[in-house]
Image 1 (tube, rainbow, N blue to C red):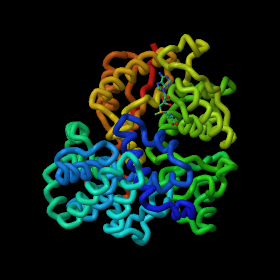
Image 2: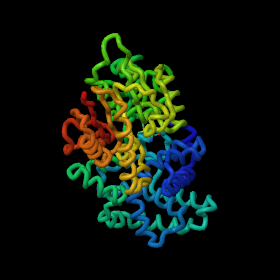
Image 3: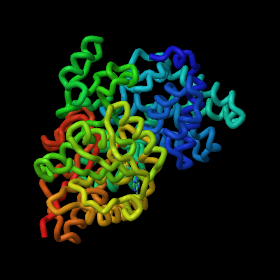
Image 4: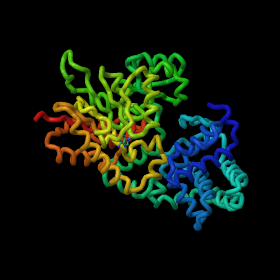
Amino acid sequence: MQDNAIQVPLWRQLQGAAFLLMAVRSGRSMTAALEDIAPPLRPGVQALGFHALRWLGRAEALRQQLATRPPPPEADALLCVVLGCMAPTFGADVSSLPPEEADFSTGDPSENSARTPRYTLYTLVDQAVEAAKRSEDTRHQASFINGCLRRFLRERDARVALTEKNPQAVWNHPQWWIDRVRKDHPVQWQAILRANNTQAPLTLRINVRRTTQDQYIRALDAINIGAYPVGKQGVILVHAQPVPSLPGFAEGHFSVQDAAAQMAAPLLLDGLAATGEGEARLRILDACAAPGGKTAHLLELADCEVTALDIDARRCQRMGQNLRRLGLQADIRVGDAARPADWWDGRPYDAILLDAPCTASGIVRRHPDVRWLRRPTDIAQLAALQERLFDTLWPLLRPGGRLLYCTCSVFRAEGEQQAQTFVTHHKDACLMPSPGHLLPQSGVQETVFPDNLKGDHDGFYYAVFEKRHA
Ligand SMILES: C[S@@+](CC[C@H](N)C(=O)[O-])C[C@H]1O[C@@H](n2cnc3c(N)ncnc32)[C@H](O)[C@@H]1O
């Protein structure tokens, strides 16, 4: 809990969350927009912003009922943030919603805190009006906002019931996204959308060069932090904590990484025959590597040489810092994976990891803005880029080597279809047994998912290819 955040009045946090919503509506990511928020305000505003984006579909539907003519953008954003805070309690699909007692005042950056309510609905209305009055942009809309919210208080059950016919309000995703998930996953689509609206846990990957999963869980237990294992190196915290304050952070005992993302390194390394006894170490290309989560995992698990390539110089810098903290080394290069002539030394790789740029439709739990930022045309554009990277990198792999293609997407165009197209066009590519689409899951077990997909993780796609000898 952050004391300075608690002292921040709710109206200021509401203003901040409305600013974030306006930024997302104008096409900016929430992470980038948060940098414009004063640091003491940031944790509380982030928590509110996450909430607003998770419940935006419902909030927009309610706003449309309460004001048929949209108010100016600043007032609209403020109204939607507040309606998003007020509506879930009365939503029909209560099972998928955050706890009623979710506390927007603690400023806990983990956004996993569900403490005693500090604000009643009436306080929310009062503070929303205060927020409106205190800004030049919304001052003239304060009585309009007051009117809308007080009407909502009087008619809330009926108003929420009316939104039940609107899929965007029920699922809190744009209509095209709902349609796409439904088409791609006709059985699991509702479970996927529901999982997207849950809070992801804080999941760590233990650096096995420094400690073990068991030892680390015991170290946490010794300071009363509840945690349990996931996979071979993963640890999920029962309640999220500020990461730098966890034991062993500075010493590189762990990294933050979702459980599904932790599958990449073992998938690429397992079954990959070393080049031979006494010969050079495995040469691996991580083609879209920054900020280095999977590069680090590869280096933790295997004695290998990794070329960690990324087109984004700033992200490459972050990768360097991350690897240093973990005590690992890679050959970091800034470059375009689609232009190997600029960075490749001509020696084939034993293994290639292509963690391709994608819509990020599998990590909506952690980035609730993604669904509102994407456009339907993004899928085809990104799929074309993925295909180009795939085709360009394949010749860089030695015969008998392996390429792992992955995306953090649930859309089949960025997963299964991409892999099918690739094997059809490359006769020397053999698709090995692979996880395929992992669907996002909250800790709540969903019976619709097959056993191998159970757990608490983001959505991902994985396909392993082996290059046939001529
Ligand atoms: C999904 S992220 C990679 C995450 C990373 N593998 C990890 O585990 O931390 C995709 C990355 O691809 C990079 N990227 C996008 N287009 C690229 C290109 N043409 N060549 C190289 N990197 C590219 C982006 O800058 C981004 O860092």
